[in-house]
Length: 283
Image 1 (cartoon, rainbow, N blue to C red):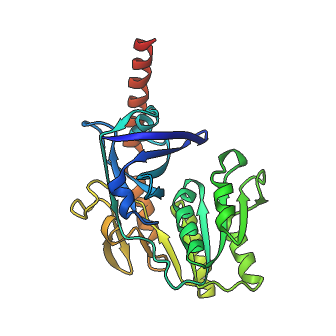
Image 2 (tube, one colour):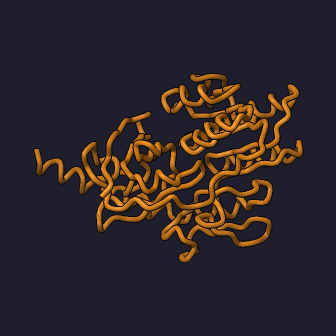
């Protein structure tokens, strides 16, 4: 069993949780993920490792409450135990040899971008973090990003936090001001990563994206997380999750991701009903 040591809401739909998992923490690196189950009958879901502490044997996960399992996960509290917590899985983000990097995060994708920015900073690279949210109420990890960034640019769709506009607006402004990046690392919604890649391709800047499609087993056997990259089929769980963004077929990935929306909605509503029923019985 894997004990929940800490739990904190970062915004109305995003939660940070620290889990005791010493075997995972021993080998975890930025860019990797875990697969968990809340109970023996639970669904397996992948969540990126947002941080880790080898000495304490802990793994930090940050999740958005969007489906049945994340709703059930969020009903758990400090002292509860997760049934499964498998990892680290996937290939770590490549950071060696990079001198100056722009890390671009969007929404809850910032939970994946943060450990990458932190590792780059610890490796001596100059880090420019460009992060975007819809509104100020959804901003997460601002202090953490500022602590590991030589330049931090906060954007919001409505202008209530940082500058008004998209992360692509801020990134292009930096490029046009003369900033020279070895690489851009973009992590967030598919549509955001697609347009970041279109921008960086125009300026000839290598760009890496983190792909997080539907996963089931995390070993490449089920094929659920397949993507087309450079005209070839790749599996995000074993070949990634990081890929050359200029080679990813984002339109195909978005179409595949949308196939499960209706199913996810029904599962979420059913879980909410069951949790509410349990609360009423315990009242």
